[in-house]
Length: 151
Image (cartoon, rainbow, N blue to C red; front, side):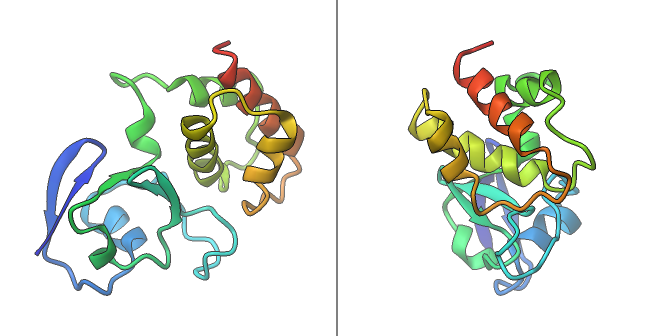
């Protein structure tokens, strides 16, 4: 049995401990913000926060989250309303197809948690490993900067 905190709630899973966390979140907890992209931790669409660190849930086994805290895109909302970062993405129209957005938002949230006032260069560097094929990169960076300013 694996015990962990999921979006602030204590949960348990009796699934195979080697099963990727991505599958557990989607299949057992019906959380679908994170997406399956490459399955090799290279695209970032499956990024979640584990104890505040951005990790690629497609390669993280369930056993790795025992006793830890997992936050998904759904866990960023506050009382059912978009977080400051999520709202900035809406305001900047920083998503086109939206497939990569959850992973990018989670990576950006980890950056803002570490560095509440990042420079544009720091934002670009932090998001460098997250792939977006739509070409929304500049709007994504603007959204992260907007969120850092509390706008």
